Amino acid sequence: MENFAIIDLGSNSVRLEVDQINDDLSYKNILETKEVVRLSENMGEENELKRPAIDRTVKAISSFKEQIKDLPNLNIKAVGTAASRNAVNQADFLKEVEQATGIKIQVISGQDEAHYDYLGVINSLDVVNGIIMDTGGASTELVLVQNGEEMNRISIPLGAVTLSESELNPDVPTASQLFKLFDRLNTIYNDIWWLNRGFNLPIIALGGSNRTLAKIKRRNDPNSKNWDDIHGFHMSIAEVKKIFIELLSSNLEERKAIPGVSKERADIIIGGLSPAITLMRRLNSDRMIFSKRGVRFGLLHERLDQLRNNQNENDQSQSE
Image (cartoon, rainbow, N blue to C red):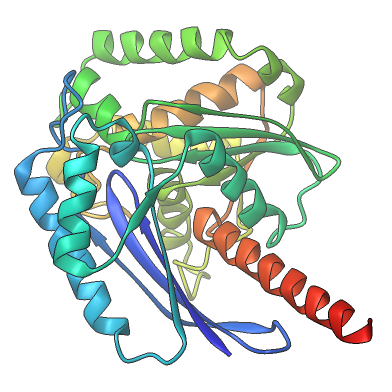
């Protein structure tokens, strides 16, 4: 038996997930928590992690370490994504985290992040064809899935925090700001040659901003008993547009009061949803399918494959 702990350090939040993996490779989740740290806050054009964000992150990871320190057979896998990846002071930051917490963070590439998203989705949803889209704080990953296979993938260095800080008024974005933002995104999509192969396919949405759409929809459904249960939930393009228009029509305080919108995300939700809205319109997607299984679930299945291979090798050596 192994307790496999995953620390996923994103650009907006850091998450901890612990799964108990049994000898027969069955598993169950025993702990899941997150802290909003805004690691990419005010990185600016110089791409430098700032002291307040670093302090918040170190404090959160220290708290995670304290929560799991007594678990037996503990194996910790800690990964950093876009903010860590892009930071000019990455080495100093990683060293500070390791000295303070004893945890070594592995910074993964955007390509690897997209691949882990694919592993997480394909092992948890019945996906045959679609575009996986994971909008994080400082990057957006896209994966084209055809016949269940990962065909193409890319990581774009733009996300909810970075787009919001660089393009939009946090209270009420102006029409000109929104036009410039959508035009910027369309220009980026123009350079991704394989995106047109996703025409008319659903968007499989990951990331806190995208998932907020489903939470708003479910919170407004009187028949919904567990509004946070959105894994596999479907929304039509018309429903997505309706909620986005509601958000655009609200100022910051009004957005904070919308059921389903986290107060910590209200200032970046419009920027965070813009990549998905633009892509859905571009590809004429008729629906969005939501997933709560991305990078962390992909890392778990990578670990299960490693343990399975180890068992097979041991069985083979014993039979010789």
